[in-house]
Length: 120
Image (cartoon, rainbow, N blue to C red; front, side, top):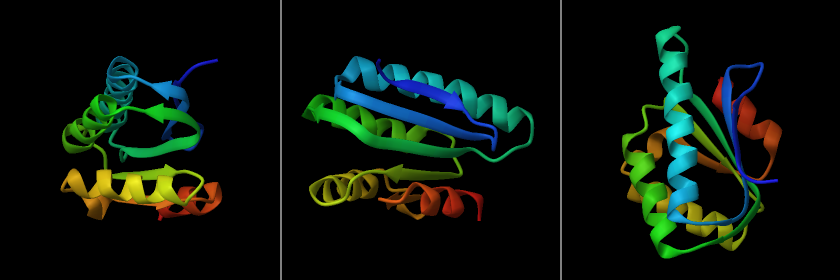
């Protein structure tokens, strides 16, 4: 099973990141996310994203660069990153700051807290 991008029943885009990531895999998730964001915006709904990193593997420098680029241009209202904390949280926070949109982004290690923040 690989990465998945889906729209859940609460109109939250859920990105399930599974295993090692490459620039191509990150770009594909970005394109899928962009299509769903466009659909939500067309319906007058906010662009809310839950980026589930609980099953993520290795992410090389080139793939991390693509993550930052997507964070800069995707038209989301809020993005919650869900991970296991520790060094992942530090790395995610550095990438979030690099987007220049950190006010729309937050890192969580609890799924329900992430969803609550998105819906607030």
